[in-house]
Image (cartoon, rainbow, N blue to C red):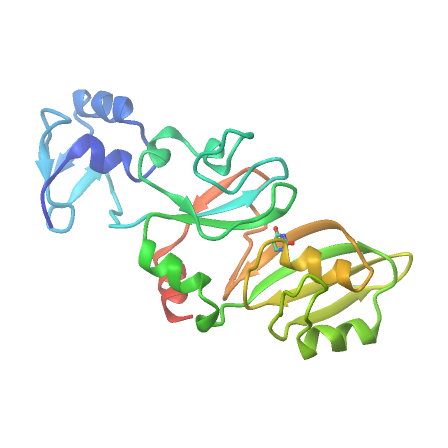
Length: 239
Ligand code: URA
């Protein structure tokens, strides 16, 4: 791999800003192959050199993968004049890395949203051909029934002509308001809301709780993010 400037490389971990890297270098706390670095502009090959910051080896990755616990009120876009986007929830160092959301959650939908700059894998995860299950927790108005479950399983065609692949509706509670887990293998615009509205049970609240074999990390508060581990990214590659 080509050599890169240390400030850029270290900041790409999202843990330090470029300015902080400069200070750390000044304090002699950045070592490349055991030798203190003199300038943050020096270059190193992250795949060959051992880079220590405060005595800790930095885990360099070619691509960045982030799990965000999306709160309501943010658009799943990199830029949108209509309001705040999920990018506003990330630090500047990450925003500079060309991250984009892997698929979209509606402005009022909460929960698991992945962001990355690895276009190929992101594309695969979104393709219906790859059958990546997306699970949503939904609270709806009205009583969900076994008949609704059968309609999901059969694959429905909505009034507006949208033909939905077979999906799963697992009822968690049923009453004047009901709760369910909905599992989809595709992600058409407002799909969960449209499917449930078609059955006469409009969605009151929606949260994505998993994608493939990656559950939402419940230690993340709304609006918080964390990096995916290497194992988690490998798991996504296998889905
Ligand atoms: N389906 C919806 O209706 N909205 C979302 O945000 C995601 C899936």
